[in-house]
Amino acid sequence: MRKKPLNGKKAADFGFPLAQQNLSECYDKGKGVEKDEKEAASWLKRAANQEFAPAQALYGWKLEMGHGITKNTREAANWYLKAAQGGLVRAMTRLAYMYYTGKGVPLDYRRAEAWYRRAARSADPMAKNDLAWFLSVCPDDNFHDGESAVGFARTSLSELKEEDYQVIDTLAAALARAGNYGEAVQAQTKAILAFDREAKERKEMTPEDIAKMEEELNSRLKIYRNQKAFSEEPPKVEQGMKPLMDDRILQEEHMPRRKKRPSAPAGDIEISWHGDFTATAA
Image 1 (tube, one colour):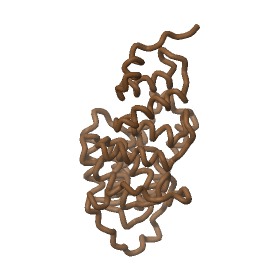
Image 2 (image 1 turned 45 degrees about the horizontal axis):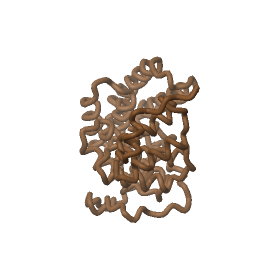
Image 3 (image 1 turned 60 degrees about the vertical axis):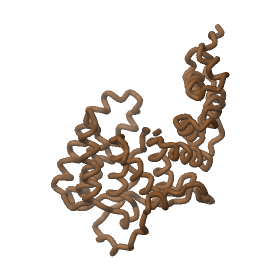
Image 4 (image 1 turned 45 degrees about the vertical axis):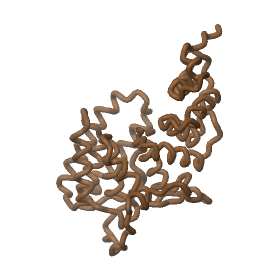
């Protein structure tokens, strides 16, 4: 049976970007219309082309993931940049993550930090959490700042309505980076217990996902018990990526170049990536 067209389609046809974004979501979910990812991407692009930051970020996400459209991380980064320059916090953190992983753009920890810092000045507690994680576990130890990371992580935790295992996990990493290993062990233990509670409520998590996260959390606990800090491994970057010519975040944030620090003690251990951002896609 053919579904009736949505009332909002008239507004979308008239060019209202929010209506176009809403219509895109309807096509994604098959709500009131036949499910059609390609049509969803088409309507979302119309909204994004009108400099509507939420649609720009969502369209970037579709390009990055290849949902209803050919995957193109380079174009995704461009759309995240547009949305970030429009003030959308989740686009700032997503673009920062792309710089952090060398995905769609060249690997660039300075730009990653700059975008994380801009996002962290917002009212979004998870943006502060993202910055704290970066300052705690960046593969390049020249960007480590344990004391600042602890402050951002504690602020993030205090601003959340409910405890989030990811933020507690970040606080533990920050405490360890600051040399407070006893507190790091306590925080990481708390993060594991919080995840156990949350995992029972997260229907979207598969048993494999749960097992993987439990392994990551427990591996960090062992590191802190050995009085060591945790660092992520350098990412496998996408080759041939070029800088985003319109990204002037370094100049706007007056980001200094990091001075080289002495090599980290041999005891510091590197383990694979923590979890993805959220957009909180952002």
